[in-house]
Every structure is written in C-alpha cells, then in structure tokens.
Image 1 (cartoon, rainbow, N blue to C red):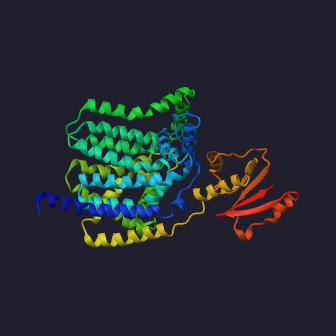
Image 2 (image 1 turned 30 degrees about the vertical axis):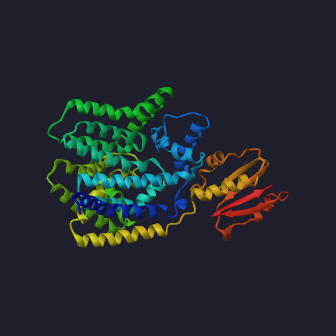
Image 3 (image 1 turned 90 degrees about the vertical axis):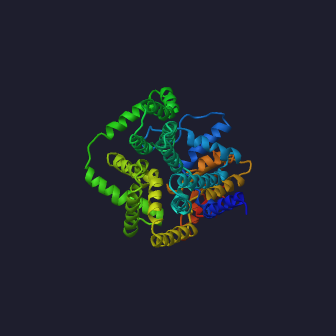
Length: 466
C-alpha cells in the first residue's frame, strides 16, 4: 500500500465518526419535524417580511420587536428566511427543512473548529452533544433568531483562537460577528462580545489600531437600525433612554446571583444535557463544568481561559441586568459549556460511558416521545379547510382559541391567497375544547336559521355557519 493510500485510508477512518453523528442528527431532526415546527408570532414576522419582499417589493430595515416595546432586532434573521419562503411560493413548508440543513451545517462546522482548537476526541464528543441534544433540536425547530447564537459563538471562538495565533485580522472579523449577533439575533449577546474583547486583552502583543477597527466592525452592524431610527423620529434612542432609566436602580446582587445559579443557568445546562433540571442532574452538570474548567486551565495557554471567562462574564452581566431573565438567555454560552463538559468526560472512560448512557437515553427517548398539538401542520390544514370550503365565496373567522394556540392564522390566510373579510358571507369559528366538553348544540341554538356543521382537525374544532 502506497503512502498516499495510507493517508487517504486514515482520513476516511477519521471521517466515519462525524458521518455517523451527522446521520443520527439528521434522523433525529427529521423525526416528527412537521409536528414540531410552530407558526406563532416569532415565525409570523419573517413570513410577513418575505411576503412584503416578494409581493410588494419592499424590504424592511428592522426585524422583530423585542419584549421591551420599541426595541427591534436587525433585519438579517428575516432576510435569511427569504430563501425557504422564496423556494416554497411564500408558504412556510420549506422553513423547518431549511433550518434542519442549517443545524447539520452547524454540527459539521462545530466539529471542524473544535478539532483545530482542541483535539479529535473532544470535537467528536462536543458535536455529538450538539447533534443529539433534544434541546438543540428544539431551538432549531423553533425558528427564531436565538438559533443563530450558537453558530455566532463558533465564529467568536475560532476568531479569538486565530487572534491568539498572531493573526490580528481575526479580531476584526470576530468583532463583526459579535455585532452581527447582538444586533440581529439577541441584544444580550453583548455579554459574549464583552468576554471576547476582554480575553483578547490578555494577548501580549496588542495593537490599538486593530482594536479601533474592531470597534468599527462591531458598530457597523447598527447602520440599518440607525437609518430606521432617523426615519422614525428617534424612536429607538428614546426607548433606549427609557430602558436605561428603568434598569438604573440598585438590586440585591448576592440573592440574585444565587437565584441565577440555582434556578436559571445550571438547570438550563442540565436540561440541555439530560432533559431535566432536577437537582441531581443540576449537580452532575455543575461537577462536569467545574472539572472541565480545571482541566482546561491546566493546558497553560492564555487562549484557554476564554471558555470560563465567557461563562463568568455572561453570568455576572445578568446579575446587574434588571430585566426579566429567561433561561434561554444562557443559550449564548452553550458552546463553552459543551466544550468544558466534553473536555471533562474525555479524560475518564468510566465517566464517559455513564454520561453517554444517560445522555443518549434521555435525549433520544424525549425525541421519540415528543408530541405537540400546536404546530404549523395543524394550522395549515385548518387554513386550507376553510379556504377550500368557501370556493368563490367570502368568509370571516372568529378565533375562540386560547392565547397559546391562536397566533399565525391571519398570516397563513394571507400566504395561502384568501384572507377573511369582516362582512364575509360565511362564518367560521375556531375553538379548542376537549371532545368530552365540546357542545355543538350551543351553536345551533345561537344560529337557529343557519346551517351549522363541525369538523375537527387535530385539536381544533371548526364550526361552519352558512
């Protein structure tokens, strides 16, 4: 066997683990994909943006409005979804599969970057955790901007690694990625951006010019919002001033730090790994992270301090943050958490086997047993049923669904080509009541002179009044 053949054989053997992981990750993502894809407010925003772009030939400079009224994300997340919406005639059918491809691409990129920075074993374990974790798959299926925080984190990690290797231009690229993420995906990514710049200061050879250009690279991402602000009478600046005033009060930092550690961050990581934030899994997760930090710092490389600094700066940032802190805000530090856990378990075969057994069982079983009655597929069938049952007639819809189920319908009717009208000839009432408690008689009593019929799709009752 020639030397070239041996090299190719060795390369093929190295590809086998990642190919198996990609195959398993793909199968898990395909399982019940139509049942898992929602179509709520977060998914409506890019759908409307795509409609305006392809039909009305308009493009918006802002994205989704944030929970703090008057704040908006940048437009990139909406623009990305022009691809699946344009491919499927403006219908959302292609969206979950588009995000599946992005998820698998992220697995591969994660593997390649982790292999370069750490080693093959750590890379395999880390990307397997990301590929198989049901939480990771759920973030992906949720189709909201937070999904891209993990891919952005990979970019920050790689750029800082290259910067510590002596390549200054990667600090600029990393700063641009950080700005892209915090403007377009989630503003709380500011803590990850801060950790990136703080760690960069540790490098012995630094250039003020490079830092200045990096700052510009970060801030350039705000240009769409700046234009939007000036066109709308400084709405963003005024709301930012209100936000600062509301968050300028002091707080009890020690109790808050304990709460964040005990009730938010560690349970979030535990749920990501074991699909449970129970005390036993939280303790296991904390031990794995702590051991990973110790082993990582033993490498005696200035760059390696980035992983614990990343988590620490984000945690400290939220202690001083006055707003509501949902657990998914810690999604921005999943990358360092996964790597630290991977560094820990690769050092001890017994721990690796125990972790793998629990991790695979909890995540794969959760994926197989997943079930949801609130999804795009069900809402699509309801929409098509109403449109097909009116033919050339007009109709109106009264939505009597609970808040958790009533979103998405106006946009779906628009995307499927026939919107309801207030003076429509036919009336359709949507209701979600357990079959044992559903009373068709009440509608016949309310509309005694009309033809009333009831059809059920998934858990939604469609009452037709003609």
